[in-house]
Image (cartoon, rainbow, N blue to C red):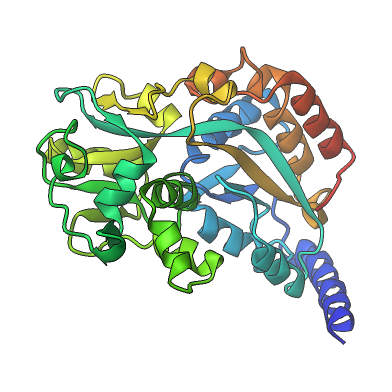
Length: 346
């Protein structure tokens, strides 16, 4: 019954696309999603408009990975966006929501890597963090005497004597951002394990998956501040509080080195080289998702996607690498281009 409903939804959506295309033709690609991917997509959109004058320059908007994928999954037709940018892979429940709305053919395009970095004001000291430091600073509950207690830590020095005696003020991505999910997984959950908190949860009878969710819960006493805007908002907050520490994408940091001092994580300085080699522990792939049903309906859609992942644009010597993207290894990049050319779907 469910399969029949999904099939009917897809059929209705395709019919809607045809009718909408005839009645309200749209000749400009519409894109939304990740604030991390936003600057890359803006670069590509601008250069695509110049390289392909027969097509209009795509419209690129932000809003976060989750918000972009939600828009993407709302339906098929010229009233709906063509591409969702994302700093994380699409989730199974999002794919299911897409299918229910008739968005059954989704092309996933991985175009490079980015690091998540931890930075403070340029005038401050050099900082060296571990995931454990961040967990002990931000978690709702931390280990003490073999049990979990409400987080008592007020300063970074309380967390780690090697850190400065600054009041904990961490500017982290809001929950609608893909960066937040990577931060939770690779920093808070990793730190929870290092601190022994995960073992305490499990020993107390909590299911491991539920325990990991508990590890990612941040305190709500003002030490952790969600930033729902893009990295420019984080930078603005940091500039008004010289002892705050912000979470940024590597590319944003590399374009603001005159304002920010980046910290090491587990002894490794973030850079294109340490991320591409796998040495830096907090990195993630970047994606965009293309609605296959819109190819051939929205002028230039496939051309834009192929231009985005071309070696001239996303390769080691292209404008995206110049901005800060960590390019895909050559073999992986070639596989991505081949899958996109064949319009391979998830």
